[in-house]
Image (tube, rainbow, N blue to C red; front, top):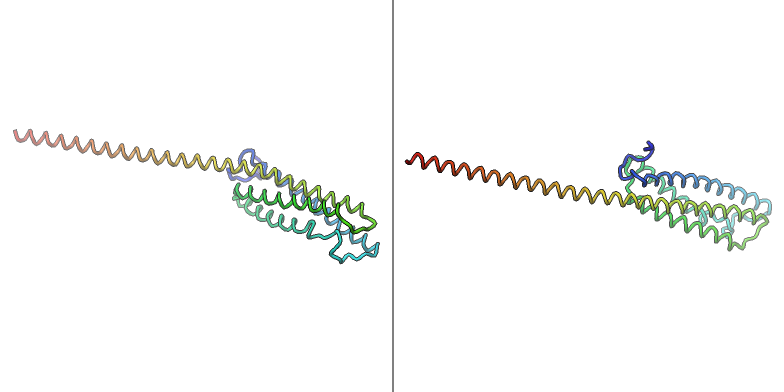
Length: 211
């Protein structure tokens, strides 16, 4: 097994590829951030050249609505996940829940970003170039959402294996307890038989002395 995989046995097996997909998602996220920076710098240059007001909030560049909120939430989750992975304590259930939530987040961002470009009514000369960049961002958002879907599948597999092993351990514990009970019962019966044998032997010896 590759050494950077968690030592946690709950992640051994095919579900370990959860971390491969997570790494791929992080690389896509880096490209996404670079594209946002490119878009931001180009928009500022284009609007200075066109003498347009970049400070207005009604323009199509609204960072928080299209990109910012998703980056902040994903960053918060990613740092939390990295902390628990480093401590070898990333639970499959937590992985499943966060993957589902982050898929919904990025899918909504992808749809909103593409819709905001398609429905934009704020015209400027470089609109075609800008649309190409933002559609690229939406494509990367969709790729990140798809990555979380795949991660959800691997996390579900890890949850299934964890629950199966937990059930097996419970059955084994119950079986061990039953074996212990049977052993104790057998020992108790053996002691009773020994006690009865001693009593009979003592009775026979007493009768012999009476004669």
